[in-house]
Image (tube, rainbow, N blue to C red; front, side, top):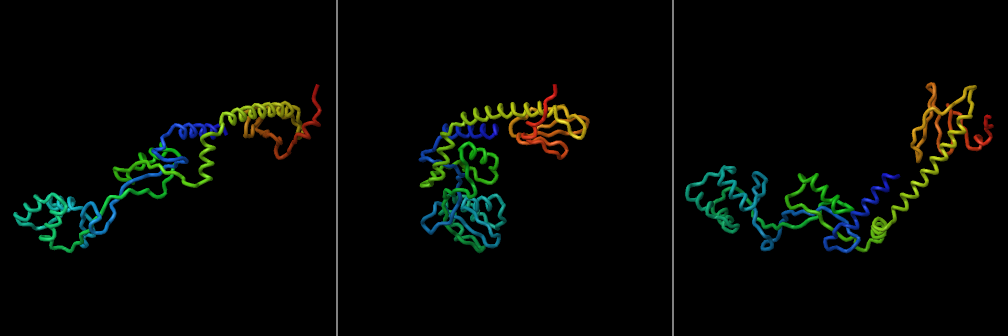
Length: 252
């Protein structure tokens, strides 16, 4: 339990100290990125070309570079090559395509839209950033953390408020106190266990693991194990309850 409380305390500090990137509480984090999306004619920010023969899409600059560097093997006469070399803007390259391209093609417009990557959700910005760093091969160079408000979500609002304001120090102190009390109880049980006889043999305490809270401690002697927990002590299948312990006569 101590490990869990430490995690919640650390999370609480992150929630209190992190920026909200201009969003109202409660803030959650996702991965934001950009994607080229086809637009109606006159609404895009660039022109691209689709070549059905190879089933590939290229921007005007990509199309131009592929031909000029020989990646796309197209037979061009000297003057046509120079005309393409001098065409540097989308509408100029488009005009060259309409005059010289002999293959089947489709021209279309597209814009780079901001998108929220699906299946991403993080409580802190730091956790989102670490995810991006560890999975950058799935995203573009423009990937980034993106803050959102859980708008009109009472459960999220209440949970975030608990995570940010709950007094985990009190929980930690209560657990420490409980651990001390349980540890004392187990020590007393072991003192009684020293007096227990089973099958004509006396079982003495030989080993105590020291793990008091939430665990089962072990005693071992001559290859035999004596296990004790908070409510019951067991010796080879024979249970010794607290009520039975009370009836054990103490030795002089």
